[in-house]
Amino acid sequence: MTDIGTAGTFKLGDRAVKRMGYGAMQLAGPGVYGPPKDATAAVEVLRAAIESGVDHIDTSDFYGPHVTNQLIRKALHPYPKDLTIVTKIGARRGLEGTWNLAFSAEELTSAVHDNLHNLGVEALDVVNLRIMLDPHGPAEGSIEAPLTVLADLQRRGLVRHIGLSNVTSKQVAQGRTIAPIVCVQNQYNLAHRGDDPLIDELAAAKIAYVPFFPLGGFSPLQSTALSDVAKKLGATPMQVALAWLLRRAPNILLIPGTSSVGHLGENLAAAALRLPDDAMAVLNRIGGG
Ligand SMILES: NC(=O)c1ccc[n+]([C@@H]2O[C@H](COP(=O)([O-])OP(=O)(O)OC[C@H]3O[C@@H](n4cnc5c(N)ncnc54)[C@H](OP(=O)(O)O)[C@@H]3O)[C@@H](O)[C@H]2O)c1
Image (tube, rainbow, N blue to C red):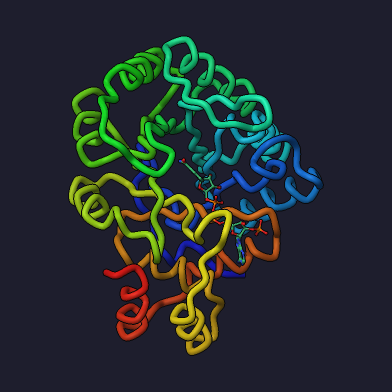
């Protein structure tokens, strides 16, 4: 079994977590709506992640809704002391699985309580405020009102640390005037590199950057250059995509998602894959970097 600690750690709030973690979104049903086809298999994936040394799991109560958090509780409660569970608020699922913004004080407060209840904890380790003003990606706009609500919930002891998701550099700067921000979670991978400058800014501020869709999301990355590098290194394309992220910046924490124990093992093994400079050069050209 790979020692995932070989990829190092980075501070997430008051704890250092391993840079290789796990994203639980794929455990809900199709379209992240409803229960999975096989709940036993989902529980097995979560337990296998912990047995392999994962100490950082990303989730949300709007996955399902409620389903993913309930599976995490069923599989892992009482939680290992060193496990950091990161959740997110700011959306509400509508009928047929639509994703709706939910930024009122009432909605944010009830989202925190739903997460506490379904995860079975008294305080949430990290809560990301998910700002999805434009479904195509981060868009400018004040985040003061919802973040002030979340900061108040933090003062009340319900939330230990705050992060932001789907945000611009300006919004991170605004956020940091309202509350300490420990992580940013935006879409980023080998082929989607709009956040290159933001990652460097956050690294300088010692804030974790947690890319979502690290493997390309619902349609995993496909590239001849990626496959060629993987073949040369005796690895899989998905492993190379993850190893590239680990080498891209020291503040990057990975949360690749999967509903399969086999894919989980493959992804975690990327923690030990070191990419040589010539492979990095080829991979950097995929996203135009
Ligand atoms: N903040 C936000 O707005 C936001 C948005 C999206 C996601 N997230 C978070 O980010 C996490 C990661 O994103 P994600 O799960 O959507 O996307 P991802 O990690 O980029 O990719 C997941 C997809 O890749 C497949 N996959 C995983 N490992 C594989 C492997 N070794 N070989 C081939 N296919 C593989 C999975 O299918 P299988 O299940 O078949 O393995 C799934 O279809 C989520 O779990 C969630 O916690 C956050």
